[in-house]
Image 1 (cartoon, one colour):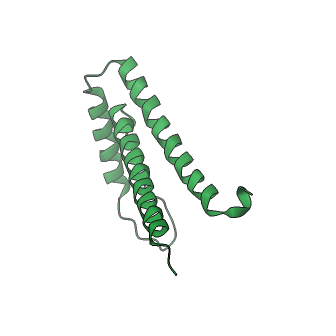
Image 2 (image 1 turned 30 degrees about the horizontal axis):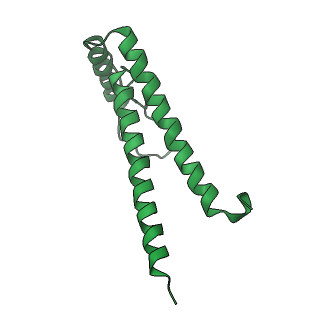
Length: 110
């Protein structure tokens, strides 16, 4: 017999934790870009790989990011605070994921 109450509890907990992880990560990215540290990845050079972003496009994007950071109305203290909040969000996101792994693996909690 299926315990439907337990099933619903697990489904709600999974949905809530997924929303928390996604929200923390999105807030972390937002604060990271607010702090002027927009995530920018240069294209990798691999043999026979498809390059989606050319080095010229990557340089133009880096220049645009630098210009946007220079136009920011935030003070250096506000930028530093946004950076601390961003890293805190990423750490909390990782802790939620690790706690979920801890709950899933019975050998970890006894």
